[in-house]
Amino acid sequence: MSSLKGFSQYISENADLLSAEVVESVVQEMELNIPEWEKEQAVCMYVELIGFFGQSLLGGNRIEVPESLIEWSKKNAEMQVASGGKISEIVIRYPVTRQIFSEIFTRLSLQFGLSVVESAKSIKGINAFLDVSLNETFYAFERFSERYQAEKQVELLNLSAPIVPVLEDVVVLPLVGVIDSYRIAHILNNVIPRVAEKNVNHVVIDFSGVLTIDDHIAQSIQQIGGTFKLMGIHVVIAGLRPDLVQTIVHSGIDMLDADVYATVKQALESLK
Image (cartoon, rainbow, N blue to C red; front, side, top):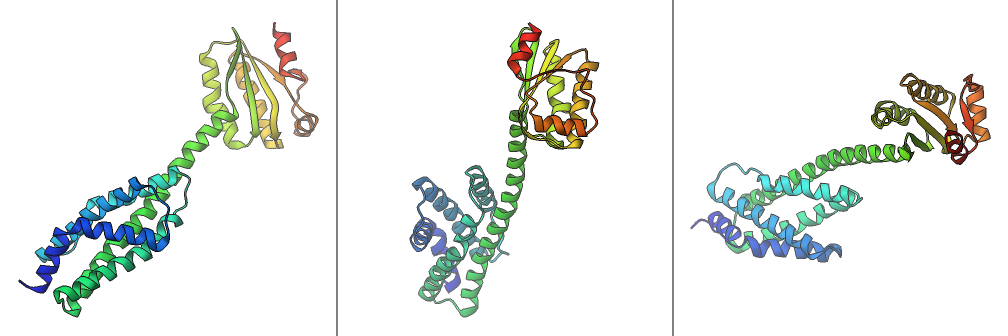
């Protein structure tokens, strides 16, 4: 039996032991505090990876990265995004993992009498696997982060302009936070159609939770009120602070024909 064949058979047949050694060595070297299930998951992935790698060496074929490694890398990235972690927390493990694999493969190369070329091929091959895993982790983290941020943005937009039914034909639209162009677009494209579906006659737009608006946004708010009026819905404004009133006045918006009250309570009492 050739030295490379013996080496390949050994790592294929002992993938479980080698995988456990890799994971435990990385955990100890980096003093990681990770749950057992995560370590078991890593061991299972490495068992498949090492077994596949050994078979590739044994067959003399061009070494290709197994799909399981790519999927594992993507899952790692997804879990990191979901937990609010940083990509660096994963990336910093790769240099140590490379080192552990190199030490194990060097030890086995000496044990099976591999030539310098054969030993270098095995170490280069496993490093190529880790390179692919690192790249896939990066790409997946970016994709999942973008999707997660988009989903959170939608949640924040919904929270910034919720629809609150208070009477049979009245809803309150409390605006919260900084009213920017994104939130204005959200109100025009999503909130107003939802209000229309409720078949109400009155909408109380509550500005008491608004932090600040500018002249452009003030014009957009007038557009929102005008849209409701065109739909036959009576608009009542409440909660305008003096600073917001100043912005609206400076923007040139005429509020004389609007029903304006200091508080939502006063606005609702007027509708009763």
